[in-house]
Image (cartoon, rainbow, N blue to C red; front, side, top):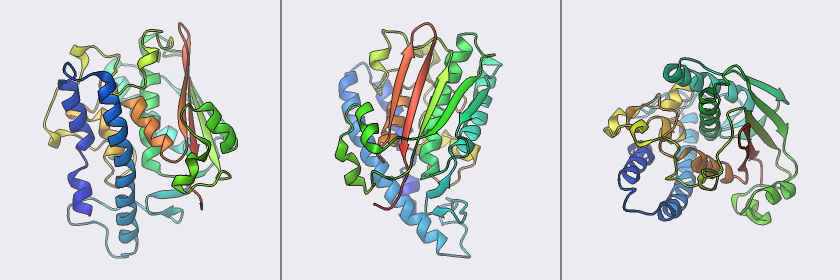
Length: 307
């Protein structure tokens, strides 16, 4: 099973590059429908496999790696497989800030700062790699917009707060039904968190806003897109910010395509794939943009508890 997980670790980058190259022959709606179904199913299948592997490895006290070279995730008393039962979003935000800041500084020569307020001490039970992917993509968007707007001196504001009950959350997320938690074993009382990322990057233009959830949509121009390359050149970005459980989907799906780990955007997978990760456990992402001013992105996550 570990070999299968490792073998298919580059599926998303390869798929992204392939669809990018044939985008003239496939409609954006068809691409979005296909990827929504395929990637959401993949998230669940891969999670089950990785959880099984992690639990197996944690039961082997003298085993620190598996034959294909994929290292076991560093386990703490709060880990159950790939799930951290005391995950602190604020620490993940700081890790992602450092990672994205280095990319931003390499590309633009400057990096914005991030301030965290609200309830930074809050902890939930969740999967670190999922949260890392989502936050990395959201911060990449905020950093890029802020710098290109010339507002790098304006801090990007991140607010962390306990989520309201699930019955209230679903009303604010189109397509999230009241019984959406039942099929994934979560109780409506499971603790959750809401993270708001606010930037002064000028907002999303009215022409681009309707397309932000389309997988094939990107605000990068053709000459800015990552060049194609062999799958073997795709770096495991997750290792750069402290994750080493072999889940290369979680952070190299966008940043690492074509071996261009310093790319801030370009394939249009960031928001829709991030939303798929968030919705897998009953959460979601909402975007509110004020054109000419900035953007607020609300990430809502349900903690993983006994269902």
